[in-house]
Amino acid sequence: MVTAFRRADLASVLSSPCSYAVFATANDAFQALLNSNSSPNTLADVPQLLL
Image 1 (tube, rainbow, N blue to C red):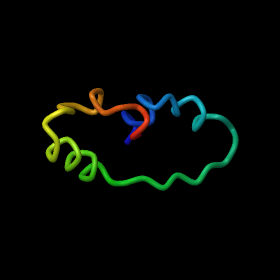
Image 2 (image 1 turned 45 degrees about the horizontal axis):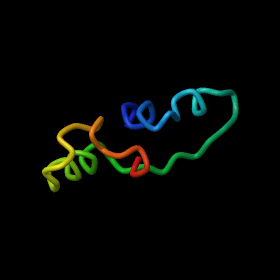
Image 3 (image 1 turned 90 degrees about the vertical axis):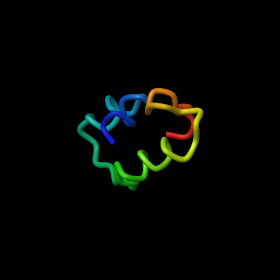
Image 4 (image 1 turned 60 degrees about the horizontal axis):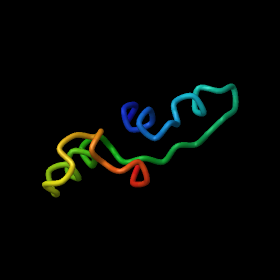
């Protein structure tokens, strides 16, 4: 999930002193996305809009 936050440019926002509630899928869900489609082979291949 941290990789996805960094890829979506959210790491700096989420490390600010404000409070946030983050609802996200588990790492297994990201892996299932990668396994279900031949296009993205790694998280870096997933379009930023989907993150």
